[in-house]
Length: 238
Image (cartoon, rainbow, N blue to C red; front, side, top):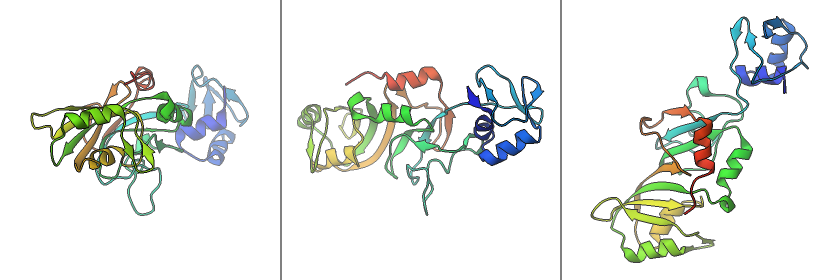
């Protein structure tokens, strides 16, 4: 159960004061009856709520898959740069949205945007070992020794990488699929750079067991279903 003013604030993406004003003016109805008491509690899953005669869709939390484009930062606010939240369609924008995890400014692919802090913590915590899979385009090929090093776990300056998987997607070993269980700063780029290989392009294609929707062009996004969230959270361990 939630207070009606909170539900209206979230559903209509307005301030709590505006929501209270709508309620006091009799613009909000619950199951067909106007309410003017801001402390009334509603069951957001069962009660039918309307604003000025129009049904209101309320979701306590939202989960959005975005195919992140280059040149956009993984943040909810940016003083001089566009963020992943900035480029959301207007109808998807609401308070307290943030990216769950980080992709570098020049990295593309699967970005999860939500307002559910507990869920984000669970899927990002290294102890939960939720794998993330990327495609990396390299300036030179990798070899079997690098594959073994990734699988063992690479030591970087001030960081130790957990075991990771790498496989070639082309005959020249210059396009690699890499799966990691952490999200350290520039991790994949730094792992390859230790062996004098530069990552030219990087794209995240999978979180847990959920793959990026290949129908989404860069910059496009859609809501995730409950079953898709489970694929992320219950993703197979490496």
